[in-house]
Length: 419
Image (tube, rainbow, N blue to C red; front, side):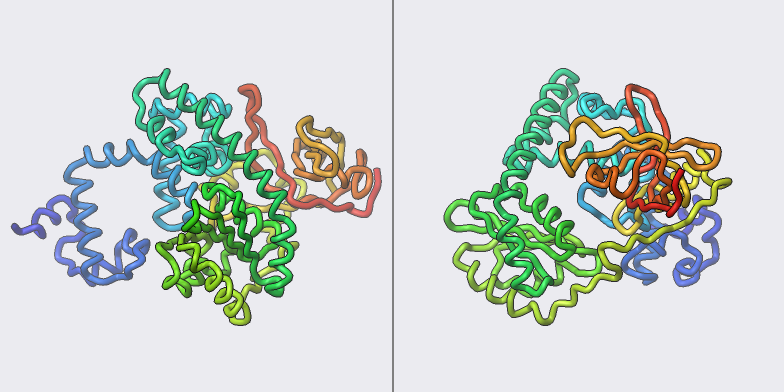
């Protein structure tokens, strides 16, 4: 079959050009991890030909992009190149709500009627779906996603929400138990690594615990759970500058299986190999380069906004760079000399961990803002009437079907002025 003539008929722009020349012109090939070899160029051309020759394929693929978006974000895949395109288109499909099986979950999470973002997937959708597998009942999530009956989808969504609450309770109990072990491990490794073993831990939440330890210690973290009497299951999470999968590969001879990527990995092994694993991990400590590119306290600010530029129109700039995620962090802004007009403590938080709602005046606009776990700073670092410099992210807030712009404060300090 002469495919070239058929391709040239559908895509006249390639007529008379060889594969090498086309590789230098292709916009798609640059997203390939395999480089510009001729086989990859041919594959890309054939893919483009099929999509143009059979337009129905595009509609078929489009229909599952919502699941592609959820999976890509939930698995912490880098939000760059093809992934950004797939997730951006997937979010549009997700927002349209064409997948009936997800609608009850969206309703329970107050996501109906809003433009969905990667943050919604990360915080409201994927944790609930993942709870099914983490609690040893993966069929619940699968049945919900496949269901064509709205009533059944609603029942399964309720069950998922219940499982997620149980997972959260197990996680909090485990977190309290492992604090002492984690601190001891961090000190024993010279602040390079945290390794925690918890025989009571459910293997389904090792990843969640490892993520929390990573955030707490700003160092790679491994959490191990015992499965029965003969097997260990574990998860590893690491900062972007440390390759978790490469590190685990050094011990692959001890594992029954392992996998992962730069920031996350997992493995299982016979319990009899655990002492040898711990010994070899300690042997690797001296060779580990865990120094981050910036310290935990440093925040990279994309733009300091003067008053004339801090208008509601700035949200268009924020949304232009979406979707955000791994390797494509949300834009971070700064404004200097804002006035704290109002302070409210949020109802569901307690003590020094209280969340705070603020109203900030800057130029001609007033901005609602949230500042997580900043209750202990009120009256000490800032108060009503204070002039403050604020580092923040900007997004949309949806409450009772009303939409408004809202700042999420990353850091705040006094401007050295007073009202």
